Image (cartoon, rainbow, N blue to C red; front, side, top):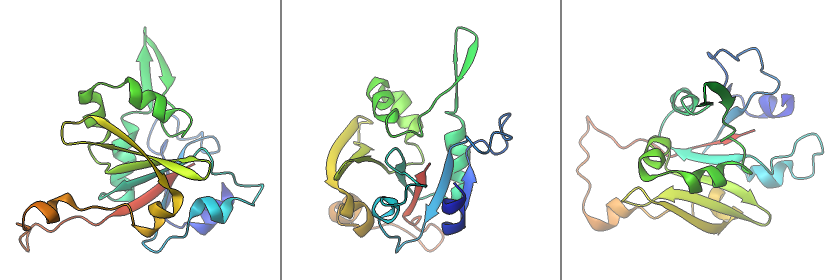
Length: 178
């Protein structure tokens, strides 16, 4: 964790400002990636102190703090009066959870998220929603996450932009969880 915190200056714990804030050492963390970020999977692959095989890459137009606030609403899950941690930040857990969500739950979860990528060996699984808030899962190369080759801007291909100087499009930002 200390290696990642040193490498990626913009980071935060998902437990920050929650009742479990003191659990920093086992907390899920979000690290901001620069626009020219290298493939984090390849960068840390050979470092036995840092395994990112179960991390997620989250693509969003919102800031680090806005993403943290958005994701915090999904940390705790209450079942029969008992509160549990909902480990959605784990790439081994999230795909199963997404598959069980209805369209409203998916729309709520993806409200501030454009795409989520989970490491899958030599490839990655890309999760996004279609226009009817249905989950779409694609297998892509890991290179596509970091090169932008997987982007298709549907708005620009269907009709001209109506963006005014007062209402500019939000930038593409990428974060990863650990």
